[in-house]
View 1 (tube, rainbow, N blue to C red):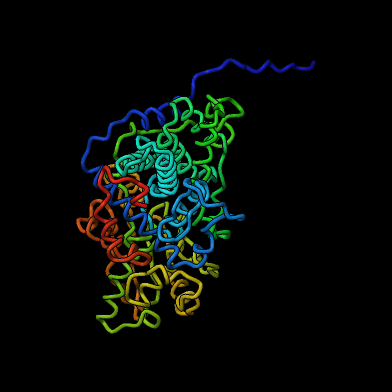
View 2 (cartoon, helix red, strand yellow):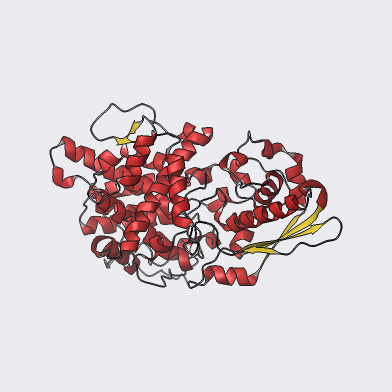
Length: 483
């Protein structure tokens, strides 16, 4: 007997609670803590510095940015890409700035069940704010000009949305890239910056979930490649596009997450619902990890440990190449997943900066902090046989305590330890670093992040312009002047 399937339920339901919570937070939440505003200004400077460092240091990144073909005629509604002479349409501007901020893996980071980089959202935020302001200026509509206070508010809220999802929701477990959260957060705050009605913001966010998302494959061996550097730009571009489609009247999908069989949960999240362990507020911007040094976030403390060991070896007159028999690294579960590459060939800069063994080996050999240039194809370290020889001597294992502390919201360490055994059989004391430079628990973090921003901005801007940027993130400073 043939079973006739029941008819689909076509009754219209309210927007999924998660979508409503995102939009309610963006449109209604009042930011009241001075620390959140202060940290947002630091985050903005750090991200812009990372963007300028990328196009100054990486020819591959520089090739990505600029007008799409054919070049659009100059109008009042173009985005001025920081650190360049380019004026771009809003979508290409969001892509380019998002890619620049992220390309070298030197922007901020936020750990959790999912891993991500909240400043990725600024590609969308600054493009929307700048273009909207320039159009308003040209049309004589001063009330629509976006201020830096509004930019900072959008930054804080995009950080919070992304980070709160990251705490308990492992998109990596289903093979999706973490920039899905950039797309969600950036879509919501772009809708707000465009002054869309709440219903259109709900529509835009539902479309962001409706997209599905790119796979994480380009971050993992054996396919690690430069797409991981522009994936955030891609998410920013899509976020702005979706906000503009909602502005044009495109309706949303109210139950895009929860619809049985066809919704996000059933199709892409193994039937699980999202776990948001705390309400949206300002916690993420107040605890985000700044990357003072150029190393993948889960390996930063390993790099600091390696530097301490390099100093010990030098003081003893020992040669890392000749006198090290083995190195054992203990790390967190995330480190084992993201930066645990064996001794096989590393194919490009993206491959190298996601390899703990490479980072540790370079630091031990040079006796100094690993730098952006050390990952590039033309770096002498990229082809130095001593690096590969040391990589072969490094073993890695998860320490369950490091993993537990990483996920403990009261601890949130990113611990790594290294133990070196010498060829004469001597084992040096284990070197453990729990909190990397750039962590909120490190007292020197603010001054080091400021110095990093000043240094990076100076790669492309005059001293006077750098100082102007560092001093003029005041609340009422207008975006089109700042950019």
